[in-house]
Length: 202
Image 1 (tube, one colour):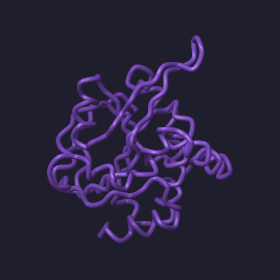
Image 2 (cartoon, one colour):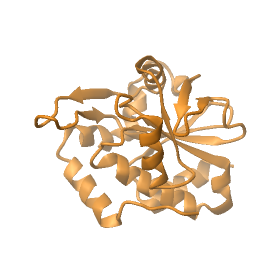
Image 3 (cartoon, rainbow, N blue to C red):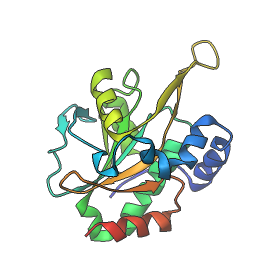
């Protein structure tokens, strides 16, 4: 499997820098983000209709028999997103054949920039297993609400600079039948992430 990952040193420095930002505060509390959603944990997740990084329609029924690892972020994210995807890709490699039971999904919170072509270039840099999902503002708001994702747009830091987002960051592990299984903290080490996924995926 061919992949090109963010260097480990860059990932660690990105996480350290992020700890001084609102985005990192949300990420560092990611294990508990889903608790803020009204109702029981069983209400996390739900039906969705999006477009993948190859321009194909995707729904919650597109991955029969697979556990989903769902992560919300955006391709211009400077720290948490690339570090998380780097660790996830390495963790799936270490899971061996069990990784064939898992479909990782990167759902953008920035549809204005993250077209299918942009997403394809981005996710393929981490792993050929990873699928990028985008859609209309309405479609993405629906799935974000279903997962209790918080997203705040903040103004560009300079003229012509891209806008940025503060966003909650958590890996949602979903069972093949659509049930929410467990949150996996994005700040997990590779070993911790492997152990967490291995514990829940049969």
